[in-house]
Length: 424
Image (tube, rainbow, N blue to C red; front, side):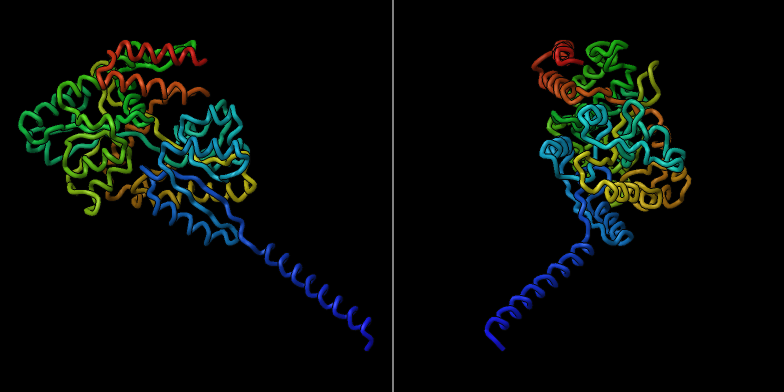
């Protein structure tokens, strides 16, 4: 064999080997999993363990799709979503609060999925749940966490104080708290999540609803500085001045409230659904197992019988997602009725018929009873593209009043002026 022929054969062998390698790579790539990135909240509602279990079930039912689930505190959800949007990449599924669809729609952060919502979904999901993902008649995701804040109480403490039933009004709450304090059953009977974050707005909104207040007037201008909005803040300040609210509430988020209440250091607490089973049934998480009562948040005589804030959340697809079909498959799986019914101990389902399902109700009858009242009363925080700015101003105003840096009247007036100046 000539040297020239030998060189030709070697080159052909190398080329053939390379081609085979490329073909093998192409086959491998075709069979590779699609990975979608999902952003969740690391506090309240479903636990991280629950979400990972749901995700594992989804992956088993959908071979070829992998889900990379990331968990951040609630306070990081909005910024994580918008920063990733600005970078033009990042997430395929994001958890969003009921207060963000207006902003997200205006800034084209989320995909409009109205045409993906089936008749079965429309009929089966509780009507109020759809408000979580709706803006101007368009759906920007699927509702997932249907939630409001309830009044939790320590049944043993109330029994010791001779209090037969939980308070029906916010005034009665302070009266009961005063009895508990006077009898030295607990130093600070009430605990709240009043840190200068969205948490304090949720508690404030509950009180605004009870006092028949409003955030915006008919012209869309701030109205929280008057009437029920002002009464709500005065109530918060009064509860601290009387020594009935734990003063550390001014730095607490929801998990801090759960920790204090579950340790038996408070008789009353306002918190989301998830606290009920953790405090009442889990000895690893609570020292008061079996001693937890739950009721709708109270009302105000002559104005309301109960009160509730809309704290619901939805799952949406960012417009920058490169895997929107896979993302929608994942969203519809974990928001489906069978999945929600299976994990109903930390977050109640969005599906109407779930509330007649023994698997959902058994063991948490008292919570479901409270939910039947509260979920129909959920009061919304303002639906406006500038909500984030408005909330920031309100948070500052509430804290100024709680810290005695300004009167409730002056603090709220300043917030209203700032919000109006910001284009509300």
